[in-house]
Amino acid sequence: MKQALQIGFAIAALAAVAFGADNTTGTWKFDAAKSKGATGVSPIKTLMVTREDTGDMVTTSGKGEREDGSKIGFSYSAKFDGRDVAVTGAGLPYDTIALKQVNDNTVTSVNSKKGSSYKANARFVVSNGGKTATLTIKGTGADGKPFTSVSVYQKQ
Image (cartoon, rainbow, N blue to C red; front, side, top):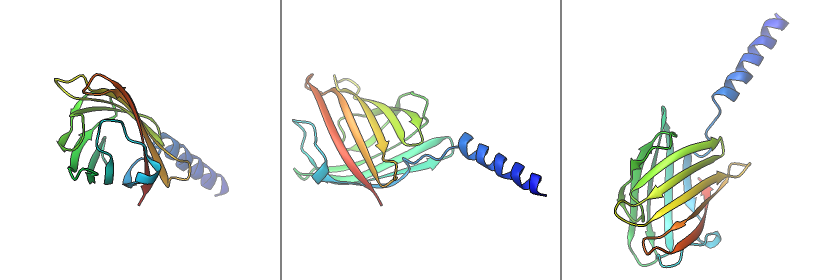
């Protein structure tokens, strides 16, 4: 009996490793005080982002507002295969995203705008405690100039 129990725990542990949890899913609230936006873009005032595991995809949506009063409302569903998918809605400088999952706490993406010079590499990293995430984006804006932004989110 003891050996069967040990084998059961071993199988459960292996399954947990093989099917690791995606710690990037959940609802995330933008923390404006800890974030630094890109120059030339109205700073984000409020933003709530929800990332849901939907089988072999992640569905992401966000709703908020910029300091200039313009609304942010977007969504997309993507696999972690590095292929471009459409981002629908308003308030983001890009309309396609391609995701890759590095590990349980990190997702990278390439964000671009069709017909524009906007292209950026993004890295979303969840802290080990799972309560904070940092989104770092580096790229070339629609104006052709390089930019970097760092957004901090708190898990809700």
